Every structure is written in C-alpha cells, then in structure tokens.
Image (cartoon, rainbow, N blue to C red):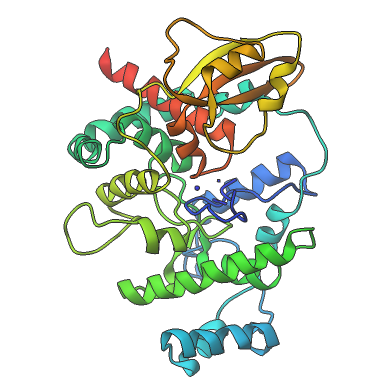
Length: 381
C-alpha cells in the first residue's frame, strides 16, 4: 500500500493506502527517466566519504527552510503537544532539524500525458530472474514464518512473498529518504494540484503517526529512513499502517518492519485480512476472459475496487468465461491495457481486490499474484 502507498499511494489519498505504500503521486512534470533516476538515487548506497566528511547515512538531505516558524507547522506542533502529550520545546527542536526535500515534491507532481498504459511492460519489471531468485531465497529462509502466517491469517505464502518482492525486493530497496523530511515536506509543501489540500492533510496524519510510532518504539525519529513518500521497511508501510496493522510476529515484544522479516510477513498478512482477504475463497484470484463486440460489458469496467457482480450478469453482457470459473462468487471485471496491443480482461475475485487496498492498481495486484506464482513454481522444481 504504492504503491498511497497508499499508488501507494492510492490512497495517498483516498485514504487507504494505508498501507503501505506510498508510491508515486498522480503524475509528474519530470520525465519517466528522471523519475527513475531520482528513485534509484534514493535507494543507492551513499557515495564514499572524503577524508574530511563522514559517509552520509541518508540521501537527499534537502535544504533548511525554517519550518519551525511556519504558522501551519506551529499549529501542528501545538496540536501534537495538546493531543498526545509531546513536549513542545522538544518538538520545536526536532522540527528545526527537518529539511525540505525538493525531489519528493517533484516525484509527487502529476505526470504529463504520455504513452498508454502497458501491462506487459509493467509486469516485466517485476516478473524477472533477479526478483524471482531473491524470492525463492526469501521463502526458504522464512518458510516457518510464512507457513505460520498462512495458518493464522489464511493468506497464502506466495501472496505475502509477492508483495514484499514487488515492494522492496525483499529488503534490498527500502528507500533512503529521512521519513520526517519526506513527510514534513509533503504535509506542508505539497505541489499544486487539484487534490493538494487532501494530500497535505493525509501527510500531516502520516507525520503525526510517524512521531507516535517513533515515541512508542523508542526510536530517534530522525533515524527513520524510507521512500520519498514516507513508507517504511520491507513491506513499505506508511506510519499510520504501522500503528494500525503491524504485528509482532517474531515474539520479541517489539514491532520492527525494517529488520524483522517475521514481523514484515505477519504484518502483510494482517493488513490483507483487515482489508477483506477471505481464507475460504479459491486460491485463484483472477480468471482470464474474452469480451464480445457488443460492448455491453463496458459498464462493468471501472466500477470500484470490489467484487460485486454475479457471473451470470457478466456473461449476459458479453463476457465469455472458461468452464473452470466458479459460479457461486461475485466478481469485478478488470482491464489490463497493453499499449497498442490488445487489452487483457480478467474477472477478479474478492481477494484480488484485497490486494488493491495495499496499492490501488490492477497492475500492482496482478504483479503480486504473478510474482508469487513464479516463485512458487521455481521452488517446486
């Protein structure tokens, strides 16, 4: 949970993303290549130190803008003190060390009109040898925790492995932005857009939860590193999702999504269950279909992230299914656009849409399913 994520964000502003992920904003005035370079830079190891300067522990240090003297920031800090009992002087000192990060702003800007969506190109970024092999290794090393999560929550191991693989390549790319810098920048300096007010309110909530999380776990908030949108750890949970859905799955009385693979595994499973995952639904979450030339089926496209249509009414509108498609379930009709090539159509079950609550994207959810399946197949050889 693009992630608004929450794209990760999906909610970024709709406000679930809850979870996890806060991935990109709506679009961006920077090119796709520039966006990719910025993200790679944020995830790359810091440059070697010179003889006069110690190595940086985080990237994109940003610039000082004296947030402590901004009226809106002062009001936020007053509220944190009154509502949660934070020491006001300590908050003022902390905010004085926070920096404005221009790259987070650029990455949140609406993307310019460009090429049409391409599912095959998107999928190829995730269903590839490096990620699959890393997933096999992660599964082998965490087999007990994955099996226990499946027993306790009813979420298959391959779905959990798929999410962590898509999010961070099993902890390799968790982000190197200081979370407080990213969240403060987005809470008070969000770029102009039709949804600016709502997004700033969302990030203020995430900043509030980041401070609460750090205090609860005894963490120096300035040491929290994450994505450019403030998502943290192996599963890229936003701070609010950590507070609501993260679990201590390794039994050490401490929730650590940055270093504990067991906590990450249990937290992903718990998040999915809290967002509608059903253990008794069929293991297959999507079914490939074809559509007729009548276009009567088009009314079922884009009707929300939920399974709410009977198979019979979809078939009457021109959706052709295979004989193996379960009859007694509700579905949603999803379209996976392939650029200039033919669009793929699938019927998606309830559990597919539970994954989209992590990142509100058909492409994302399908990649999670396909990556987990590919890893499972390699393990079975």
